[in-house]
Length: 143
Image (cartoon, rainbow, N blue to C red; front, side):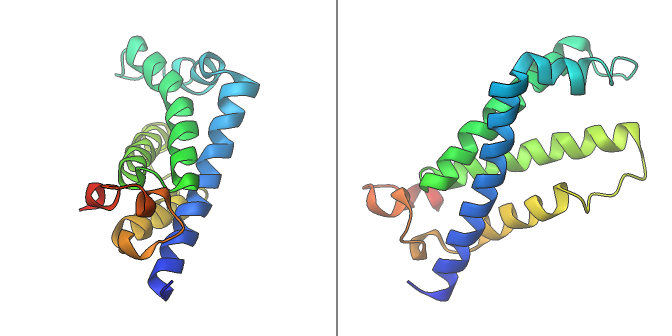
């Protein structure tokens, strides 16, 4: 495997682990509803965002993190998973900035965002430790 293939594998796998473990905690320790109530509907009730949207996002994000993280670990439908997690990062970043306009993204958002971008930009065809590489038609979904 080429250096770019290894780079993509490491980016994909590390960010997959990060999101999978976060999703696991939020789904099975907190529950998605508990996550929504703790981090969305309560803290953002006084914002312009309607409660139904806060509840929906708060419940959906843990499930998306869990499933997309698992897809990245397996290397299956990696582009779809990376794009979904990119949108999660946008929502989370906006939420933090809504509460704290000078919020610094250097904590958990920036490193994960960089890994998502690198995994998207590095050539999928060179990541041979991925189901996308071995399943017929898998790499075409990356084009």
